[in-house]
Image 1: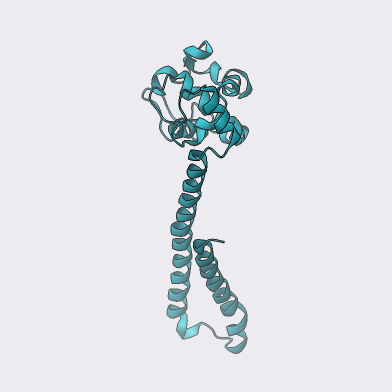
Image 2 (image 1 turned 180 degrees about the vertical axis):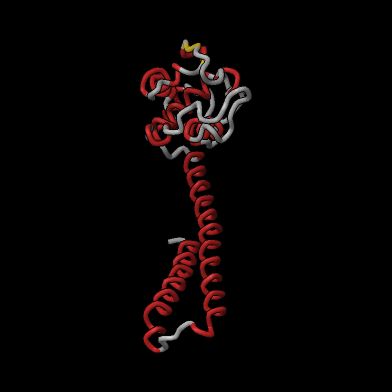
Length: 198
């Protein structure tokens, strides 16, 4: 258990204990509670709630950042067999500099692009490598050129985070992050990195 988890747990414990005391114990001893102490009670309750929300926001973000850094270090160290295979075959042409998507299998990613994902990516986008020429969504040969794995992954799992000029939000389904597992997303990212000519 990390230090941030301990602090978060302590703040939650204080809030829970306060809630139980003012809901169960104090009213038994003082039936008129909070009575004249209403302002103090509201102030303390509000401060505890704000402290809890702040702790969740700050420590949760810290915990997320630590996890991402640990994952990046693990990937940079080549500890995953998928990363070693990709590096050995040279399919991506580079190791991806520690990006999560670069560890996938481009061949499997092409299959996902052309058939697995529903609706299939090739049915909406132009991508020369896949023989796709649809124009519902942006031309991926253009919009993904020079983009890193992180950008490509975000575009798949949260397509409205950055919408290509000339297109509206909501055109691409936002369900691929749920429909595809982490390995499939990594495969698709690796394929798109390669196919878009990074």
